Every structure is written in C-alpha cells, then in structure tokens.
Image (cartoon, rainbow, N blue to C red; front, side, top):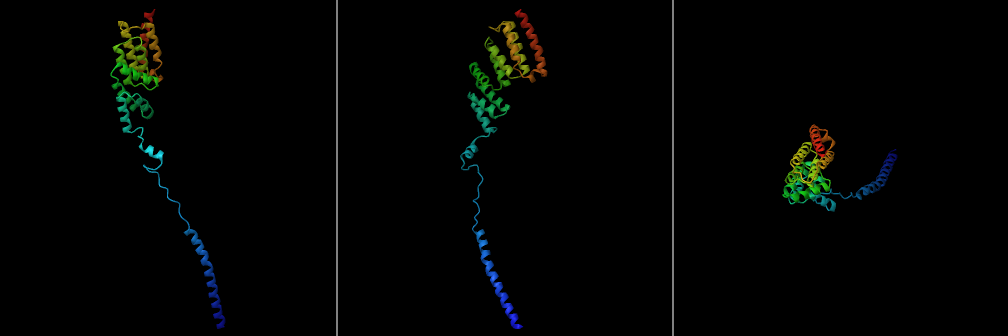
Length: 229
C-alpha cells in the first residue's frame, strides 16, 4: 500500500513536470509576439512652422479682418492705389470699405484724381459710399455742365441715400433756374432725374425719406415739363 502511494506521487509529479514544460514554450511564443510589436511612429501635429509649404505660407498671410491688413489697405489708398478698394470690398465689411474710399477721396485733391476714383468704382461695380458721393457733388458744384451733371446724379443715386439725392436734384433745379446749368435742356434734365431715381433701391424709395423725395421730384418734374412746353 505504501509502495503504491509513493508510486502514485512520483507519477503525478512526473505529469505535472510534463505539463509545465509543455506550456512554457507556448507562453514564450505568445510573449514573443507582443515583444516584436513596435508602435507606429507618433505623428506630430502640423505647427505654425511646419514643413508643409501650404501651411507655412498660410501662417504668414494676414487675416482678412486683421487690423494690420486694414491699416495696410488704408496706407495704399492714401497713395492713390485704387486696387485697395477692390480688396477691401472683397475681404472686409462695408465699414472698412467705406474707410478705404474715404482715404482715396482724401488723396484725390483735384477734380482729375476724383474723376479717376469715380471711374474705377463705377467701372468695377463697387459700392458708392455717402462720402464719395458728397465729394462728387462738391466737385460738380464748382463747374456744373452737360457732362458732369448726369454723372453726378448717377453717382449720388448709387449711394442709395434719398435725402442726398433729393438735395442734389433741388440744387440742379436751382442752378437751371439761374441759367448756371449750361449745356443741358429742361427736357434732358428731367429725363436724367427720372432715370436715376430708379437706380435707388426699393427699400430707399419706399422709406420715409423716400416718400418726401418723391414729392420733391414730382414738383421738379412739373416745373421742367412746363418749361419744355
């Protein structure tokens, strides 16, 4: 009995040893598979000074609404660079665009320079600011004639301000009465005034100031029609 017990213990130990040595290579092979694993290289996020050329270039481009870009456009306009108005209209809001036009007007210290600004704005279908229209009116008042009168009425209508357009029409009528509006007949003046009225936006024509303007224009139209007859 004792012999049988010892024999059983020896056989059991032998089986345990076999199982142990059989499992060890498998565990080592599994561990080796993980030991051979190498993680992917870490991708660094593109920074401000990354190697990508597009990223690098965009980092140095001024933001369209930045103060530096705005000041640069104002400086260009102050030297008479008309393209500053195009860029301001494309990249900035209306307030900044009007500032650029004001700078161009300030540079335009002669009728010739102002006419150049007006031509650029209208030719490129850019908005006309109130300040630019007022400058055009002041220039027209110094020498109202057949060429400048329709142009000034058109510029003022593009500014889309009912009060300013009404004021200009009344000035035209006053000069016509005095005989100071040379080279343009009553019929021609009435036709231009009526035509440019429709350049004003619907919102402006239907506003309170637009209602007052309509009455003033109707009065001017009757006077000019009477003179034509």
